[in-house]
Image (tube, rainbow over all chains, first blue to last red):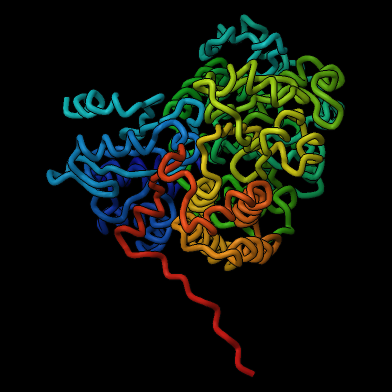
Length: 155
Length: 449
């Protein structure tokens, strides 16, 4: 698997005058290949492919919200709680997800399958509330929709 | 949409033009073909004639920005066009709809703009969370490549990874160079030393997409739309407590009252308008009576003490507690502060801290002045305006709704008693504190002489 990532990263670096510019796509590839987060081995793979240090990769990964340097669930459920979504019932959606998934916001389910997060504006303010599941945006979500959404997650 | 001329969304008929043939059928690529017989100087002259000003929030004249990029004979390094598609200002969701519905008009604008600054390298820095938008652009770019429309220009679609600060142009360039997205000292400005220390123009998605119709119809014709100082149309993102939220393309100068009550269908549930944030969460708030009077353009909103910003209109009805609003807005900027400049890193945290204690009923009269004092120590002291945005927004809530803040202090609690529309909202910074303990707030050291 590791050599595949290496090749994929090298292909991405070819698009840039400086290979270091490919660090965000490279970390994304590595995170996807390691179950949604970046363990040390993933950082080492990226470091090797880009000819930077693993510490440098960590300094980048820890800066951006979409990278996780601690274990997370295989799938991610994110609720925007910024102003426009909050005005449209985001807190009720978040609480319904807490009940259905049996976790508090910020936690991962006991079986390690899902992490529930509150996140900042996802750029869907006119289609509130926005819930992002594995980076796919569900729009106009109401608390009443949550049981169905969670059922679909299990399928 | 309300009889207004579609420019950015022309020919879409409410749908999306994601096939090249469909785009050509409504007159697409005319501007690109015309641009190829024009010199860079002629292109910039059209932009100047159009008076197009940046749609990302700063409203800087686009033609002038391009004219700052040196000629290749003045600076032989590669020239770059970088498109800011990192839309993240709360309330703003227009660029994603532009990329989804008119991807070819956007890419056509990229090619024309590249010619304008004599560049053959375009980077589109697209927000990491925008998955479908990225897929649509990948497909559109592939179709244009297959149709051999790109000429000698390379367009790279670069995905971000979740950081509001990367919408600031120099932070974006740092991020694109593979670094943490932290703003640079200016000068040098990007036009002189931008990406890889080379001449670079950084433009917003809507600005670039608007370049296409400007070359199509001519700058002078475009300038007839809208009002003086704010020409053309704008894609307004309407959200909050309105019946019909969404993106609406309207000419600049459109009355805010009509956007809310006619286009947007009025306040949801027949409630009463309390306030409007007119240009994204960093712009000063307007009271309901101010909102009745302003038009949506640079001059009118500036005169009202606010700004057109990213044209993101957030509507608040009478259930909204202004202290809770201030807490939530401040939490956003605290979370997104990159940490490079101390006044922003520490000041945004202080603003949230003070606001939370006012909301909890533990505030004092002095806290209202303290909020303004902290804000003044942030304003203008940092490399970028992120911290200023928090300070200015909070100061506007205190100024316009001072009685409501005072009520929190005097009644030792929130006068809404749990009925505010923002009550109990959990922000990412709250979750962080719950897991890692409250953010440490240190009093400044006293200097003993």
